[in-house]
Amino acid sequence: MRVYLDNNATTIVDPHVFAEMEPYFVQRYGNPNSLHAFASETHPALKDAMEKIYAGIHAPKEDSVVITSCATESNNWVLKSIYFEYILTGRKNHIIVSEVEHPSVIATAKFIESMGCKVTYLPINHEGMIDPQTVRDSITDKTALVSVMWANNETGAIFPVQEIGAICAEYNVPFHTDAVQAIGKTPVDVQSLNVDYLTFSAHKFHGPKGVGALYMKKGRELSPLLHGGSQMGGYRSGTLNVPGIVGMGKAMEQAIDALDYEMSDVREMRDAFEDELLKIPDTFVVTPREKRTPNTILISFRGIEGESMLWDLNRAGIGASTGSACASEDLESNPVMEAIGADADLAHTAVRFSLSRYTTQEELDYALEVVKKAVERLRGISSSYAYAPEGHDSGLDAH
Ligand SMILES: Cc1ncc(COP(=O)(O)O)c(CNc2co[nH]c2=O)c1O
Image (cartoon, rainbow, N blue to C red; front, side, top):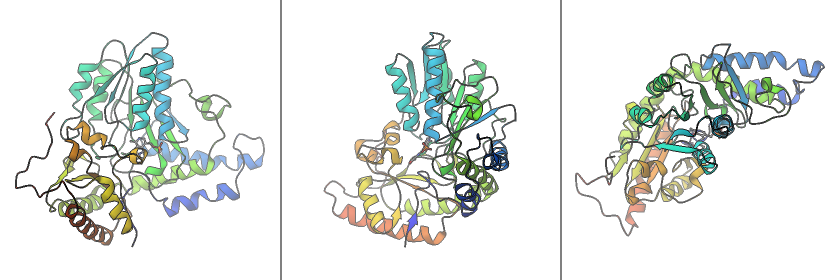
């Protein structure tokens, strides 16, 4: 039996999405910017897809949604353009990001930091949450950008973007949120909060890999990261990925249609699975479930290295993660667990299960049995683990 529980890393392409994309590989394959029928026959589908994408985030027509290759590109674009426009010119000298942003934000922040930009990394508390007051306390008259993700890819924690957006509006500081883990899991409406830039990526909501987007509010448009042709109004050059855009449009439409199911049925399956996992002694989940996206569990099994658990799961046909795939190659501790103050042992024992609308109860029942056997085997051979008495300290120092 194969059970895929790593949907925060990437998702299966919805069959309806694939069907919508296929013709633009083999029939209507023209370059949309060419001057002939092979090109113009792609235009209706592109227009329809863009309308679906705008509708999916409730973006008004006067704002911009620019197609990119992925969320990593979109995040790089925001931070590097802010650097070019504000930091390099001396107009500002500071940006604020949370310490648990995706590596595509953290690494870019560290890059522009090495180029002279001051960077504040906002701490998370013992629940893995951001306190909006830390944003207010960090903003100065030289702050060029605040970037805080809508939902964290490892814990599922949904951050207070409404409050943070309001603080940024109060100080007239541009606000970027990486909404990659929010689309399709919680309502995303750019008119319901103050947000100037918003990142998303199709392969996180059952669309194809290799296509993402950056929303930009009118009047906050960024200078391009990629120069060249006139595509995307000159904001992002490069021949349009027609099947990718068509796929993202269909996936967005499907994600919005399935949002109620995700927020009810998927959440219920996740909660029930989590309840069973927490019956295993010496287990710990970071963020309270009511503050999380409905599909995510980051759980620590004290005494078991996360990678060891993954290996046992993989042998049984189950795909999970110890954190973002981008970081999974190394054996370092989970950065979020470190940030919440987990001790060294606990920080290395986190495993992330992330469900989707395709996850079944049968799959979760199977996964639970495999996890229980893995815990018994791995703790049995552990030289360091001895079952902790009732009330054992979780190894977390409250922030
Ligand atoms: C919050 C967030 N931002 C950006 C990205 C990068 O997206 P991409 O460039 O379109 O791939 C990811 C991918 N997150 C993960 C990739 O693998 N495991 C993850 O949690 C993400 O979760």
